[in-house]
Image 1 (tube, one colour):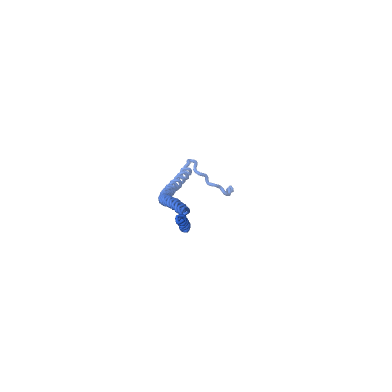
Image 2: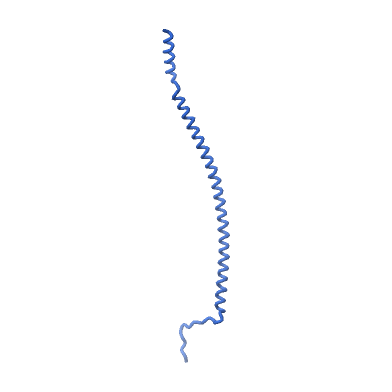
Amino acid sequence: MAARKKGATTRAPADGHANGVVIGQMQAHFRVFGEALAGLGARMDARFAEVDRRFDGVDRRLDRLEGDVAFVKTAVTDSARETRAIRDALDRKVDRDEVEGIVDRVLARRGR
């Protein structure tokens, strides 16, 4: 009796049928992968659209803030200019005691 070889493997038929089965399975897997990838792409597109909408909202808010800051800056600048003008006018203003002293001296000279 002839001895059997241990670990003998079965060979694929020479007609290529096994190769065709493997290729068909690979195509099916690629098709499923492609469908999943298309679904992922659609979800990502929706998410990016949502992010874009949020950024548009943030941009509008920043535009309003920039306008408000410009308004406040103008108001502060105008207020500072008016405060300087008032301070300068007060510095030029004569003190009441000085005026009384001048008036007394003028009247005293006339009375001589």
